[in-house]
Amino acid sequence: MPTASARHILVKTKEEAETIKQQITGGTDFASLAKKHSTCNTAKNGGDLGEFSPGKMVKAIDDVVFKKPVLTVHGPVKTKFGFHLVQTIYRM
Image 1 (cartoon, rainbow, N blue to C red):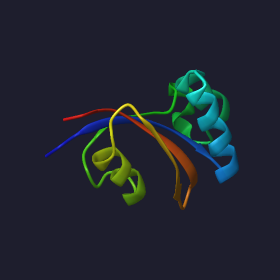
Image 2: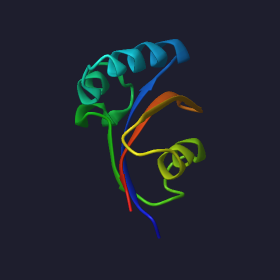
Image 3: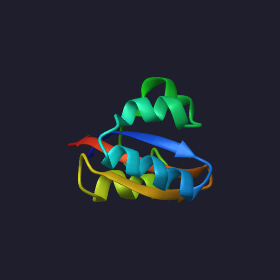
Image 4: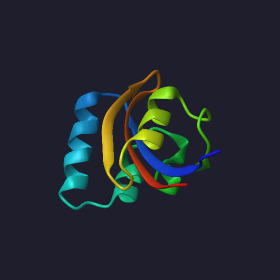
């Protein structure tokens, strides 16, 4: 079964996610922005979701992590929790 490692930033609005994504594109560190802005308890670890296999995350996150290019920041991705920016670190 495939596994992947990813990190994310969770915020309340699409606009906030888009603003943060622009900062990342401009060179601001993903982990520092996760610590500052993310409402998820992973924020303290820079948004690190750890290693997981398909089906462990909500479908929208799984689809990004297991189908989209690695090391690219994707999103905003809408889930019942809010809007995510997702970056897959590696996929095996």
